[in-house]
Length: 182
Image 1 (cartoon, one colour):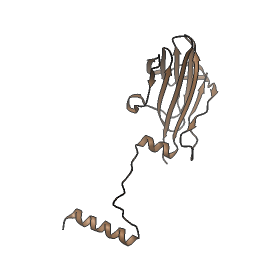
Image 2 (cartoon, one colour):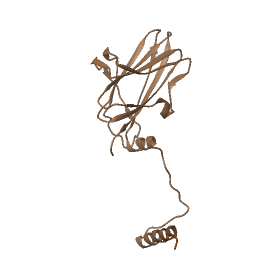
Image 3 (spheres, helix red, strand yellow):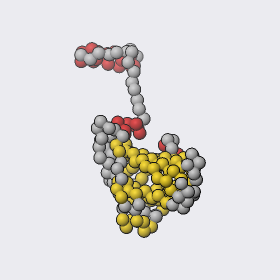
Image 4 (cartoon, helix red, strand yellow):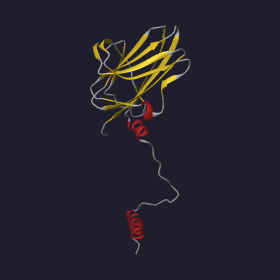
């Protein structure tokens, strides 16, 4: 007898004797690993808006907790701006703690990361990314492989936005999920 046929018959017998029903018309639904993190309660977001003048800087401090952080940002401006991400920043004062939101609203879990604005920076650290945007364009985005960084645990990162014109409406969204055991 064919090995695959024998295995199929054994599975059907097990299903029949276990009291379960087998419905042929149903199908398996799968989701990608990032979407799964959202369902598990480990995907967070921070969003804000600021109107910056020419040369004005908005600095966002990201302090990671005990887990790897899969980080992606999406920044838009009505005029030109530059964005830089730094790693291992040296900070003398964290600044103002911001609220991050767990995207799984029915079963939210607390993040081990913290986000601050207006930190006091002693040394920006190592430059990981530099990008330019503006006039309705954005930096960052939804394409994970091109825009995602996996941030080290227990580290400090600075995301710096510099406006190149007056009355520049900048909106920024930081999305991240934690790589941890369930």
